[in-house]
Amino acid sequence: MLPVFLFLLLILLSAADASVQDFCVGDISASDTPAGYPCKDVSHVTTNDFVFKGLGKAGNTSNIIKAAVTPAFVGQFPGVNGLGISAARLDLAPGGVVPLHTHPGGSELLVVTQGMILAGFISSANGVYYTTLHKGDTMVFPQGLLHFQVNAGGVTAVAIVTFSSPNPGLQITAFALFANSLPSALVEKVTFLDDAQVKKLKKVLGGSG
Ligand SMILES: *[C@@H]1O[C@H](CO)[C@@H](O)[C@H](O)[C@H]1NC(C)=O
Image (cartoon, rainbow, N blue to C red):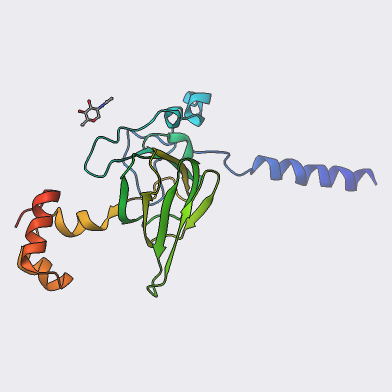
């Protein structure tokens, strides 16, 4: 019996030796890659790498969309590197809106912690899924789909959002269409919008062409 026991012990020990890597805190002085940042030397990793303190503070909503997103993505929070998760805080002043946008890299889970938010997404089949969320309500936005958030009350709304990616990415549709330098005639051709509307939006959003 003893040799069998020793054999099993040996297998267990060698399995522990070949353990999965616990973490890979991002060395954000290097470049991000599709596989994430390279790992920071473990001897330099501290508790602080796994803690992000920025989400307790309201973002500055004095801007054209009256909204602020405070990211805790891998660039700000290197501890999430390689873990497939990240977070952010959303502040929406009265009248505020996060315009139609996508996160190419991950799905989003939003939890309202204050106020009311009208939120929704549009599926690939052009189905619309939207509702008004109250404090404590949670909504999920599937990866890559166009979605939006609008303040639905008279007070500032706040939400904590999490993502299924350390770096979910962000593309705001109106900015993609009108904050660029594509010639207006081409934008009109590919959007079916008229010249006046395209020129107006390019002006408001800082586009040229
Ligand atoms: C918020 O942003 C606006 C516009 O950039 C700026 O004028 C203002 O000082 C900022 N407020 C705070 C508290 O940082």
